[in-house]
Length: 426
Image: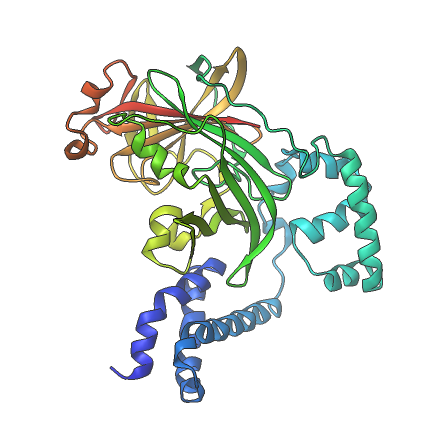
């Protein structure tokens, strides 16, 4: 194996993840082959071998641009052949609601700059105005947005409180057909990666229903990771800080959620109908540790969802891969979440029309989750179930013996026991 082949083998995974963030299927393989061929030809001119990966990524970036240029020269797809999704959507956040009440020019200016993240030069071209004018118009549009926005600005946000004990709730299944939703939340954390978004959520043990750990979350600004644009958001542990005694069954999930770090910083992306993590940062013993989507298994094991971390499809509707019959579930596939029914979730005295979504594969083998999502695409309640023999060597007993009072379901005939709940407050 020569030097080029050795370096390519060492860094192949990183460049493949980068390319497949932008495209999939045969097109991605074509771009990768063009990248490798161009790199092989140019390799003798690379002076710093330690810079092989960023050099290879720069070639991939150029080849990706070439691919998009070729696509742009192709005949446009007739409008009538495109799926009519946008027409069915309605504003589902305070940000969207506020934008809908602004003038068309202000709303469009803010959308292009903050949501589509276009540079001012491109916005100037679309509005046919000087680039210098864009800055002043953005300032005016921001002022009007602040005046209409129903939440206090950054620095003045009043955090919503989590109850110390999980409020009473009931799930009443209906025969009505599940409704489709646009579900844009970050997997496992519940926040939407969009400017202005905030969230408070907590983890509650069962059957005690006590709050074990809570997080205050907020999107803090725009960010880039390896050239990919997204937004930065934080998750900060709130009072009361978790104090679990030795032997408490909730020690592992609380520690796995990062409660010891007190603050997590993530970069997430909402693009092309998918949400995904780009990076995660924590601090341990005074040292900050940053992992990104290029870091292979270390990143994918915790933050990677979907093939090559392409993320979750935000268009959520029943696929028929998991069916429910009372408390018995049958799963034909385990390739992502599926809608298993519609229900009335009565939570703390308020009734919510929800769909129930089950996931058998996102977290780890032997773990099932059920989450209840309203028509706005927001999770209200998330439940975790363990297969009866999950981590038997670690816990020493089956979950039906550890938590005999908790609810039970079966999935493909195997017994699962309800472990804990997560409550989301917006």
